[in-house]
Image (tube, rainbow over the protein chains, first blue to last red):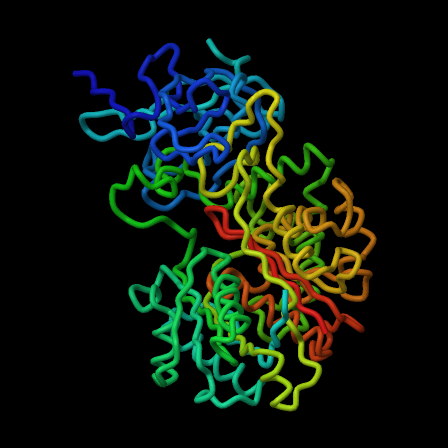
Length: 146
Length: 395
């Protein structure tokens, strides 16, 4: 039987397998965005206001990138028993001009990336247990997209 | 802003022993009291820098150190600002002194750190951004250092050898510092051969975590004079600023930077604003600085600070380094102590240790790492969650 697919953390991204989106907050009527919405700071120029929920751009450009060659400590959960280095990209969203951190899928290394390269959001398995694949958003280069 | 005197400085050497942090803090405090020639009974305010890795006694560091030294009824405070905790504790003591509430205060920070990466609190904590960055991205502290290092390469053409040269320079400094944890001199090949931690940074580019302790005895200038200390090292300014919204630079521990709406001007860059604030308060500028202790969590970060503190223009830090300007003997030595690369982070002690080194430099007591004729020193660091920190001391 196929495993259940569930978000690793609720409420940060949509579960659209083809075109997932990050769920952000926006000061209504402005271009001031936050991610994640539930942990947003405030824009001091607008006073107290409830952020509206918005779906953020699926694409953006690499601001910078790096790796984690050593297994991060908990609460990180390695995807496999043997930890493989992960590549991490900071991507400036096309519309919001906001830099968002995310892993890249397995197989993407720093050699595949450069600053300014176009990236898009995808869903991937962060880790699994016997019953469930826990999903997370990741950044992949647009060029290697299927 | 009025000044206060640094009457005494003290340190427990940095290392990795796993003993009770209180031991390191008390040793540093006694060292500072002896250096000041002040009897502990005269201390009317104990300002502790908090550690969050040693249980409740760490959260109430002011009380913990005061009790270990002997409770005297002194007023207490405990400050936490991550890596900037030491500056916060100094800022608190300074406020007490300048308000006239106390004449002479003790500032202490010490830590015992576990092996490996610093990690968030345990439990299921999706409402804690520090937890989320580890869980969803695996974004350890060095990940952020790596992002900024790569960005520096992209913007300014820095090379990994430039980063390695920072380590080479600072390890030469630390060879003359008996309080440093690492006193071995490293060459370029050593750094190049060390394993990658967070590309483009290697193990020898990144500071480790350590045990250690540091302390200051600070007082009003009147009190210093009453002790016959007419020309003490003085704290001219302390900056503990936050970032300004919108800050487009992603930094620890966030998953996203602020967005910059079309037509909006980003706020002043955070780290530049730390320097700007401390210079303005001291009435001094980068040209007045003789020696600096900056928070080199990574080698690349040291280069960023040269520019953020105005020692040179954007993109010129590598030239400053290559010309030897920032080595002891150069125009503006940076991290004569050896910096974090030689000490490792003992979080609440670090910003205090920076001031200790600057005080030794300004008094001409720094031995083989002495910066000749140093009269003005600046320290800079940054605690995660937006705690800026910088101190200017002068004679």
